[in-house]
Length: 72
Image (cartoon, rainbow, N blue to C red; front, side, top):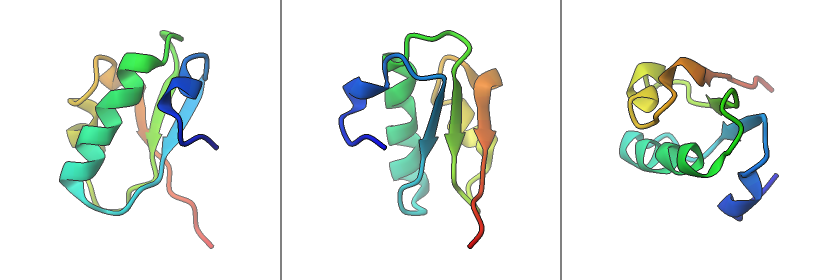
């Protein structure tokens, strides 16, 4: 877990899990894309309502964007 986005630079998997707000998630989702240096890193969202394609277009690697939803 990290709150400092700079700590994400060498990660292979980044999971976003903020509030369900499409604008906020789209803005935030583009940030790790610019920081993570691993070209094949997976950028995941814990969203349950926002289409993954909308988050993917906020990145330079939409083919590595996935939805991952944790159940309790």
